[in-house]
Image 1 (cartoon, one colour):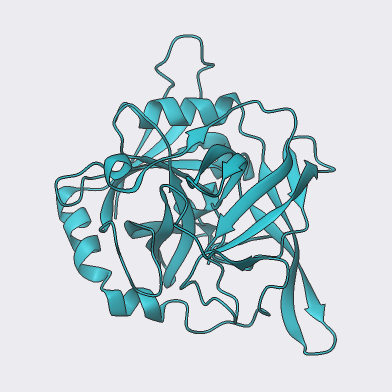
Image 2: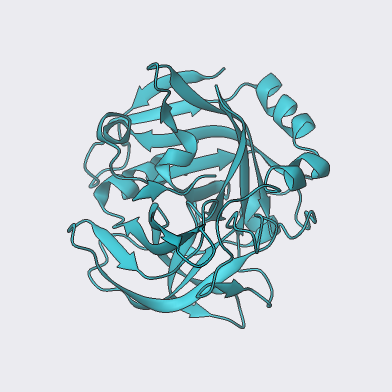
Length: 293
């Protein structure tokens, strides 16, 4: 299984809400200057260029989404330092400050180089409803990311929250809509999965989705599905009770990792399955903390 992802201040913060277990959280705050630099850096041309090259086969199970974009879903752009331009998928969720998205932990904490140097996610912006360069709801600069300290130590759980500035005088949820979020879900079933995969068919430029069965993975704290979205779909929402007419449902997981294989007929890399974490008390704590920032 591999992660599908295609200068800041770090602090540890405990959960603040009564009734939610305390969770050590790594919070990365972006300065005003860093946020301005992120907005300047991510031009429409740069956004389109980041997904141009791909070695992964076009999806077969996942299909282009033809309707109104699901509420709050968009493309999360950032720069891996050291590294290169990259992106994930993220979704706005209803929160007290109207500024929170949920995504995968490895999108905000990519890990370390082979030499042991920590890779930082910098110049982070979010574009809800992104479609082939179009940015219909604006571009939002990240002001903070939150990931469990346990993720930085053992890569679990692979979930993160990001808090954004307003854009054009509007909070993210007001501009783009938002999804409900559920914790400690015990069943999955038929679900809608969305993402911006970097396959040869999508290049990260348009939204793909799977309308598919989700089951318990062999690892107890994960969900599993044969959806074949390629890298770049990391952090994309797994929605229960999704209504195609309204674009609304309830997020209970996000895309974490994919199993890769080689297509023997074309020698192309292909994703054969996806897994996502069960959103539990840790995810709830991150969510509650993010909503207060």
